[in-house]
Image 1 (cartoon, rainbow, N blue to C red):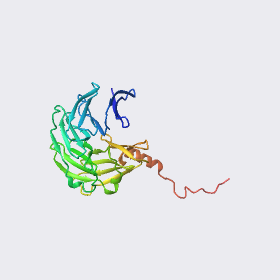
Image 2 (cartoon, rainbow, N blue to C red):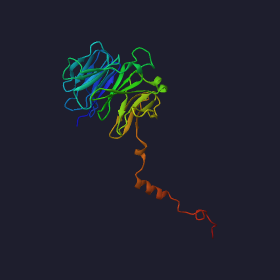
Image 3 (cartoon, rainbow, N blue to C red):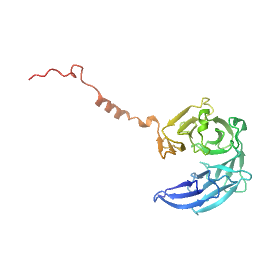
Image 4 (cartoon, helix red, strand yellow):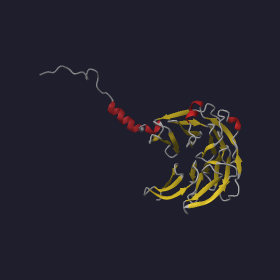
Amino acid sequence: MILQFLSINTINNLLQLWDANKSEVVDEYFFDNEITEMHWCNAFMRNPLISVANLTSNVIIIDPRTGDSSQNLRWSNEQVSSVRWSLENGNILTTGCVRGNIAVWDVRSSRSHLMTLTPSSRFSHRNKDYNTECITGLRFSKDGLYLISLSLNHTFTIWRAHTMEMINHVSLPQEHTTKIAHSIRFDICSDDGVLRSCTPVGDEVLILTLDKKNGKNFRILLVGHFHRVNACIYRQKYNQVISSGNDRMIHIWSPDMDEQLPDQQLEKISRLQEDHWSDEEGTPGPSHA
């Protein structure tokens, strides 16, 4: 079985394709501009394309089977800051730009994007700095029903993935906004039907509900890193959050239920720990020679 993964060298603007079995670099791709985000299409193994955003008007598509850039998607007058492939269709790509717009593409036709989405500007009042509308990340929910965008104004926007209808906005809590990095590697989980984000905030990971029906936006903080958390992902199969930080540590977070013993084993341990001695029996009596 061939296992491969990608790594980014931010100093040299270098994207490397690795053979995980041999722990060696298979191919390298150099860029003139900083790589802000890349995403490997995992919808279909027959279409393993890599999309790259590097703050230019071109979205670079790499085909690792040929070892070269297969095509460019040009978004005129925009600087592309984020990219994400659809989970349901390996030909559909979403891109976000510095000005806050989102474009949907069918990569089989590079002439123009299918549609453009614009989050409402009325949710950016909390931060008036330049480029706060910039889309720093795009994620699809694991069931493919929702697209979630995050901008530098610390606002999540939730869209229906099939119609691209905007249905909700959720802002990060004010006390965490000063801890947010410009490039945020967040993830989405929705196993129990509730949409949640897993977002690095300083040296912690914030779990925040994004559903419209949850007005209070229930949140949990995962505390354990000693330095800034730079990325986190959600493993649906194991119901786990994995976070990495500048402290060179990787943490795996699991629900409490995963750490509880099965009922039969717990009952067995309880029986072994039971005290069958009465107070009198447990008290040493006088010795008789």
